[in-house]
Image (cartoon, rainbow, N blue to C red; front, top):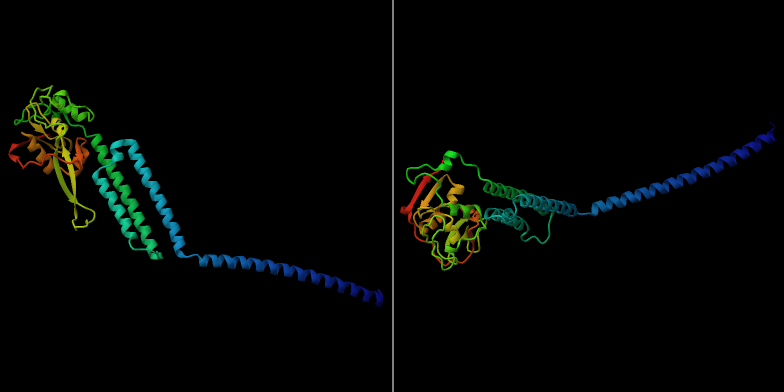
Length: 320
């Protein structure tokens, strides 16, 4: 190869190198543009993340907590109502008080808070979790109470015979009383209707059960979850004891044995008169026991006042 050829070869190589340099430069520019776009996206994302307040995240957490609480409580309630029916669905005073306490807890967490800080939202989340657990516990306890009432433990043959020297052997209640106790919807027989003679058609005992529209009024007080406007920390409960409850308590001897003692206690209490029975029910039995009886009406205006105590007309009979 002569000198001319070498010079021509160098020129070609220089043009080739120059073209490659341009291509490399263009490639670098494209990479730089991609990097720049990537950095912009990352910067925008970081800014959005930094600009979103903690309250937004806390709010989402609170919303999820409340939604889950609603689902769990509704499922617990539906399950209990499906198994035990209307009695569970209506609830009792104990459950009512417990659920009201959970509502008060949530209300107290919201009082005078027009704007919520991070700490406030955290307190709301904690309050919602506590209310959820408290509500679920209340429903489960109600299920246990009602299911135990619906399926009382079987009595032994020895205890059901009621052998005592005081009242004699055999079942303490009249057969008609037992029918009324075991069949809540059973209507009263004609002798106890308006104008009837008040004599039991089964045992033929003359009773004094009051008329169909007369009730003995019972007031009970219990500790409340919060003080009322007057600063009172107790709550009043009102029950009306009427004709059907009295009739289902009568014995073949013309006395009155307490059905609440039979259902919830270890002894049968026998009263010689209706006023003594009413006083016994008022003073000796808890609110939840009265609330569980379908023949003790709640919150109805009374036409008779509670009679004075007459403890001397009351006897006890051991069951077990």
